[in-house]
Length: 175
Image 1 (cartoon, rainbow, N blue to C red):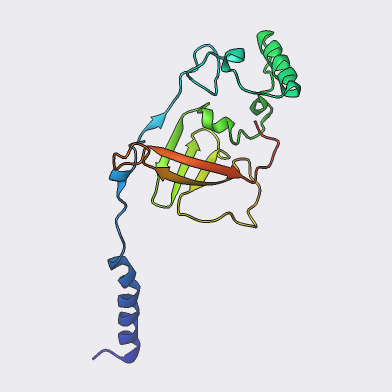
Image 2 (image 1 turned 90 degrees about the vertical axis):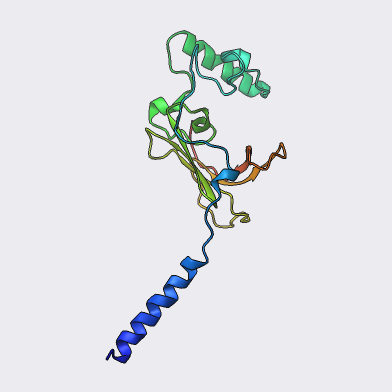
């Protein structure tokens, strides 16, 4: 006959298993299929907007001060230098640089968080919380910042097609 200790252990194990019985499955049919490794074409130079030509063709709205920095960067690259691409100095890429998929990128979608990882760097893992949380008051600054996002069904097709993200709490320097 089992003693009180054994009965207590059985009861504890049973109680711990109750939450498992009520757990919901992740409905991945609601999310876009992002499986596999993502790479981008870097024909004729890196770009932030793949639909526009590199360099001045990107047409980014910049201040006059940054326009001078940008022009100096283009001049250095044309002369064979690295420009202001600071990852060559072993600085972390961070956001927004890592989002250009400068190396193969993997996107992992979970129910409450989406991860974006650049395969070659350990500092290039972006965690986007999609669980409805508010901004923390004590978040540590990071090269990738702190991101909160929300999956949206912009077409009304019953399936998410857009991940809207806001990122704060950056530190640097970063690319």
